[in-house]
Length: 117
Image (cartoon, rainbow, N blue to C red; front, top):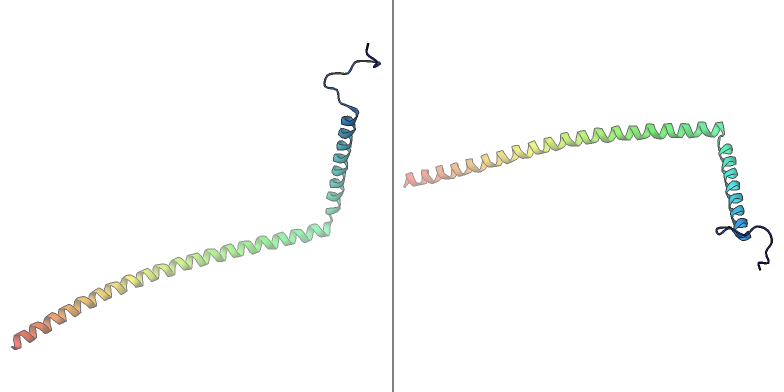
């Protein structure tokens, strides 16, 4: 014979310790939510909001300035690189012409010596 009184326990019934733990967890979550709510309302100080707005506006303006400056520098870099490539090409052509002219001069001098003899 069963010595317990009342209705029989369900198969998935919680023990008293489990119910207490669950209650404490819910209370802790509720307190944390209340603290967050209090912190959020304290943060909304109009002066602080204005300061943060100004800081953000200045930061965005500074970012835009540096992005534009970087774009201009990249454009200038591309122009200088193109000029350097053109100068190198001109230098190479000039060297080739100089070498060809020296070969012609050497050939003419050799022919001039040969004709004198």
